[in-house]
Image (cartoon, rainbow, N blue to C red; front, side, top):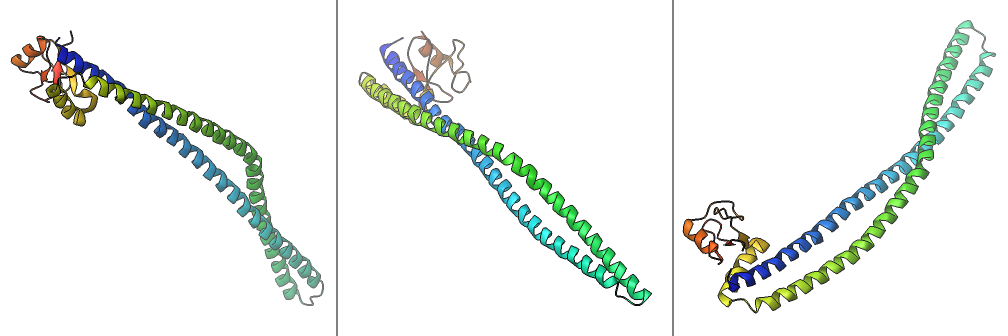
Length: 234
């Protein structure tokens, strides 16, 4: 393996390290973002439950007022019932009273149903609030840890970039220019292995015999298919 290839491989190794760090710099905030959205959704759901309880309580209050009014009507109609003089008037009043009682029964069912939902939600709320608080605190700790981790990785990137620049000074200018051109579009895969059988590990196609022989001789050379720099590990 000639010196020019060794020098390029040293740069490629640094590029691979930087690529791994870049992936972490992208992935870690994204994963935390998913958790943050989950917590936000839980918070919205909790707010929805609170609103539901409030609305149902308002319904219970209104229905309770309507219930008392209907009960008062029944009392008044019952009193009036004893003052009626004809059987027809009496029967008409009886039907009105029965209709009011049916109305009362329906209102009572609605009130009980709403109160049942309010009671269950009220019992459930403290637990959900406590869980949400724990999730928020955990998320805050993870955000702090992530900020510190990202800062460390950015420092590592700065160190690796400085190392890359220092080592690039020892590389043949023509070879460095070719590598940098490929690196700008292919990143850390600008320089890849080729198998002894001639399969490029960048495009997974077979190179020509002449190209393979050059690589087997310990030098880097362009793949005739994907145009990456290829080499045979020594």
